[in-house]
Amino acid sequence: ETGVTQSPTHLIKTRGQQVTLRCSSQSGHNTVSWYQQALGQGPQFIFQYYREEENGRGNFPPRFSGLQFPNYSSELNVNALELDDSALYLCASSLGQGTANEKLFFGSGTQLSVL
Amino acid sequence: AQKITQTQPGMFVQEKEAVTLDCTYDTSDPSYGLFWYKQPSSGEMIFLIYQGSYDQQNATEGRYSLNFQKARKSANLVISASQLGDSAMYFCAMREGKAGYSTLTFGKGTMLLVSP
Image (cartoon, rainbow over all chains, first blue to last red; front, side, top):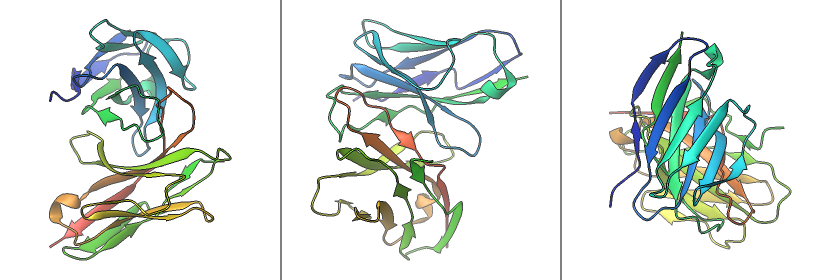
């Protein structure tokens, strides 16, 4: 079974630039969630895609946007980067059953540094 | 108010000993799920154990067990017979009941260090 893979693993950008992070879901999973993990904090929910549609969003501004493709892979786009966007970005996939015990399977993340 | 509180920033334990990592939660939703994840230095979040709000028994998964006290809103993780490979960050997380919506709310985590 193929796990969740993210690319790139590390990225350095400057303020004001735009960035695209990529995620391949675990085989058979139709739901992808993105989380931002600042240093010393727990992950915070950005948004979730289910069968190519955004079906949930956390408290993040519109400059954080995403896409999910027919093969259920996903992109996270961040425009007008700010210093506070420096964080580990985690992608998680799941079966999309909508049950309380549904597990999220995470990738190893993309470490974004904004200078 | 924080929904998930982990009050121990760091814990030390000797190999082969048991350790308890604390987690308290806050929700008014009668249907919720509680999760524990392990995050080694590689960054990946690894699922350890799940407890549902309606589950009558405490969850167990190998060396991991969850001490679920619903009235106190606590869901502590117990790791028995600690191993050096258990050294990592541990996060408690909660999902509140919303069909088709898989978001988790995480605590700030506890760093566990296992010494020989």
